[in-house]
Image 1: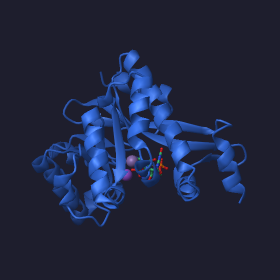
Image 2: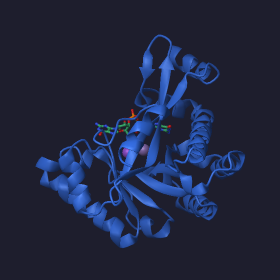
Image 3: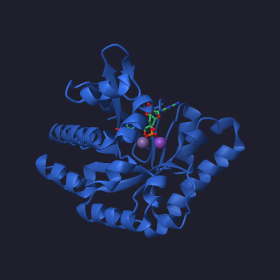
Image 4: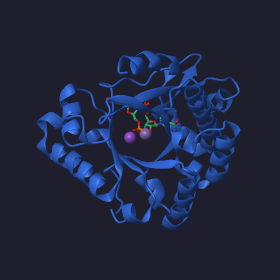
Length: 252
Ligand code: G
Ligand code: G
Ligand code: MN
Ligand code: NA
C-alpha cells in the first residue's frame, strides 16, 4: 500500500506537524489550554487530516512511535510556552495502543526531560479505551494522577460505557462531543444532553469542556450553564503554535 509506505517514512522525513486549538476558560475569559492536533504534510497529497491516517497508524502499530513523537513535541512546546510566560495546559490525544503500551514510562520520561510541570499535560482518551480493560485503566489513571497529569474523556456521550466508571476512575474532565453542540440552538434534545453533561460534571466534580463551539449563541449556552471551558471555531481553529499568541494577547 502506497500510503502505508509513505507513513512509515513520514517520521524520518519530518512530515508530521502539530497544530494547536485554543480552549477558552469561561470563568476568566482567558485561553488557558490548547488541544494538540496532528497533521501530515505529504509531498504530493498536501495537508492530510488525521481522520485519514490515524486509523492506518493504529492498524499497523505505527501509532505508538508517531504517538510518542506527538507527545514529545507537545511537551517541548508546553515547556517553551511556560518559559515565555504562557503557562498553557496542553491536551494530547492518546490512542488505544499508546494507552496500552508503556504510557506511564513515556510520560514520566518526557516530564523529566523537559522539566515540565505535570499540571500542564492533559491526556485525552475515549470511553472505549478506558472501558476495554477496566482494571488496567484504573492502574494507569491512578499513576497518572499521582504524577500530576490530568485525564480527559474525549467524545463523551458517544460511547457505550456505563456511567459508573466515572466514579471509579480518577478522571479530571469530560469533553462534550461536538455532535451534541453543532445543532444546539435548534435541537432541544441536543441542548438537553449537553446541559445534562455539564450538570453531571458539576455534581461529580469534573471539569467539562464543550467541543465544536462555532457560534456566539453556543458559547453563551455554555457560559450560562457554567461549563468550564469551550473549544471550537468560535474560539479559534487548530493553528500553528506561533499564531496563538495574538489570540491570547487579545483577551488579556
Ligand atoms: O484535527 P481533526 O479534527 O481533523 O482530527 C480528527 C480526529 O483525529 C479526531 O478524532 C482527533 O481525536 C484525532 N486526532 C487528532 N490528532 C491526534 C493525535 O495527535 N493523536 C491521536 N491518537 N488522534 C488524533
Ligand atoms: O476527536 P477530537 O475531539 O480529538 O478532534 C477534534 C476535531 O474536531 C478536530 O479534528 C478539529 O479540527 C475538529 N473541530 C474543532 N473545532 C471544531 C468546530 O468548531 N467545528 C467543527 N465542525 N469541527 C471542529
Ligand atoms: Mn480530542
Ligand atoms: Na472529541
